[in-house]
Image (cartoon, rainbow, N blue to C red; front, top):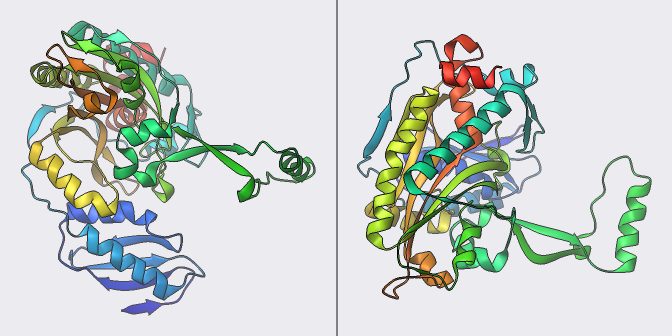
Length: 403
């Protein structure tokens, strides 16, 4: 162990076993949830050692012990599964990828970054987001005769529990709170803010959690509405969902937001119907990517589960091939190319049919699947691949977003 004191302290650690870049990436991303004392953990290129970066004032021994426990469970992940590619579109634009897209959008006044994982946008960014949502909705209607829906941004904690979210992604949940219904507590909060220069938060004991959360997955609010239904034939539903996932210090422009939009498609029916819908979704993603003229792949993948359950759940997902991810090339802040996860196509089996009591014609729990397209990430990928000059964009898109 090697400690160097500075504003942030770096501690050299040995990993319990050697890891590849896939596992190393998961370690680095999830390390922001290990402790408030830890800024992050960076895995070195050798895959055998790492650098623990602690925040000023951290108890180094406590931080190190917690980091080692985190690493012990993360390195159990099994990687190296064959990655199958189902879609591989190539753009016609021969220009270079654009670096610094987030900053470029802000400089042009097309986007405002609030700095906490929320963005406002207008002009070509807004028009492109609207176009992607509109085009994907049209494709869903044509292919699946999908029923339009609308669902709230808040979701009951009991529903999230039924969906298994607290067991898989507890670090990403945002609970909604209010000042407790108490005259004195409310007045204390009011008085504190009546003459303060900045916002003062209520005391912890004055915050009331009533069991509501911000929705972390677009498909979840749909399932309670299906309770008691029998699906003699399969059915699809589609909508634009507002999604919230707490990302801590991983927040970065349009790359990783706290609050974002997802064009969702849910299919419900027996196993044959749901699997046929997943197969039909692949050419739709290909058509959407070709319409925008971007490089895009759909490939087998797994979700980023919380550390203590990551190894088991990732292994099951990979072995069953229940998740296909939409990967679109983009550029990091340093100009290096990365594959941005811009959506996914998922099979759930009968999990939600059992949990929310909706069935097939034979009385068995219905199966479900879903397609989610992260609108803002599609926007980022498109501006990365075409830049800011209208002439590089395909005519149908150019005429819509730069007019």
